[in-house]
Length: 227
Image (cartoon, rainbow, N blue to C red; front, side, top):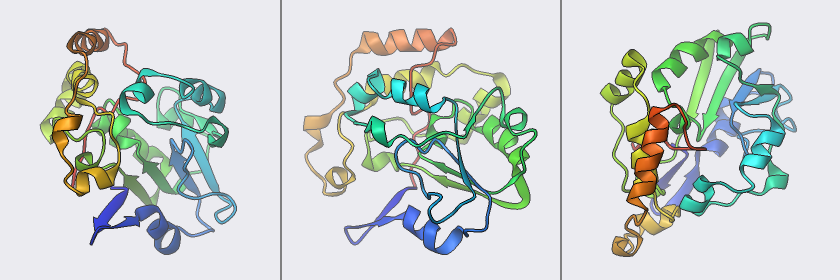
């Protein structure tokens, strides 16, 4: 998870990685850094950034979309990290002629993967034999996924094994996501009645139908995780 709340103080896991895990000499690949990369080339010169979109496409996406409107998030477009590799088809194909990496980092990315088991099967193709895969995810209890249905292995396996569409998870996201994302709000046990999901049922159902036809909404959290 990204941040652990201990004694009502916030511990940033990224800081732990920078100080205790990642070495300047390592080849590092980070997926989906957006505006907050785990590390930069100032301290780790061999870090590279990847995304399913180019830098310009990311800036266009985060100028305005339903995800931002429904969650209340804002993104400083000028702070978007430059992308070195745009993922096409698969990681294996994208990095076919690229030296493998010692560390691959996913910070707030795994929950966006429509098929997470397929991801694990594919990502091993770009990591060295003794390399590391580091995953940082938002704890659903302390973010806008607070009222979402949890993730189970069998749900993920159904998607992988049966190529099930993501309609159920899209509906759950569109219908139950909150316009509140402060971890301290949930941690301090604020009155949740005032933030109960009030999203449009018909909009969520329409998103479900579109997902069934292969049209996925921008930046959906398909998989809510919690410790």
